[in-house]
Image (cartoon, rainbow over all chains, first blue to last red; front, side):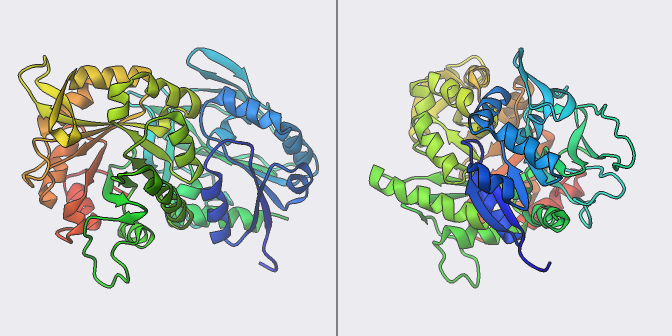
Length: 212
Length: 253
């Protein structure tokens, strides 16, 4: 890496932002924790954390115009990484406890409760990365730390050439769900790389390497 | 492959220091929570639980700093329990880097606290910690206690767990007062009842004395196993516990 990648961790009042920031630093990034629009637009990468309820995360994110920041970055091909509920809100809608909330709609589909006997899905699970995944390079067989009850359980987005097909990584708890998506400049993980020990740091450094 | 069984060491802290002896070799400072957390992380701990036994409010602010220092350097999930009395306490702990918060006696005194925490932060941050004792006074045969088991409440342990889950608890840390300190193994009957009757992950705690004790707790239904002194005293390592679980056909990280 010629110079450290500059990453903004979007600080909009949700999630364990300090751990995410420190994990990125450990992975070699220069990190700023802020909701400042200019900084978030200019950084090499934007990390969007998220913990808690889908509707709360969407409204907190919109309160800092995070939805616009993400759109603007993607329009310019600039990378964004969503984590946990920060991944979920990228879909069209979320259904939690009977309440349906509109998401950011970057990807089609619904985030809904997993069909599992024991929820939350809590702990270290395996994943099945797509061939050619950048995020999981060298760590395809590792376990990652999940803590969630809801997830996207199908993928329906068709991508036309010359854009590359989205790389989908699946995991299982009760049923199959999306553990990670790599779709051009927009990537996301349902698990917490910043809580997944060495494998998580490696995933973050894989992401940093992909930033242009 | 399903989610791995979690092995969790529990550390007592007061005023930002680990207070019960931990006898690792080559530690510069046996009371430094960051050094201990890192050491357990290297050994393969799947999470860390800190139990704050701080006596005063002044001391508690040093605990927040401690949580922050650990969270900034050790990248595995961190649960902090002890003295959590309000959603504001939870906000502060999460803000300093805790991933989950254990609530015990404050929820017994005021159950609505559980809903307040879960509504604001999600059920996944909320661990209901129960100190449970065998009793003929309750239908299940298990009663919830406070003050380290010295005071019995009127709560049937299974009823309380079910109610707490309805209110928003996302995990149960079930500590058997009868088994605690005996080193004769976990309370398997209690673990099985809790697993059978609840929809959230169950952590079995209390009674671990040998590596052979962990697999039966998992067979009884524990999603995670927690121990303190056997790890701190160097009687066994996390890796040895995991090897014993794997030999029993359990999935570990």
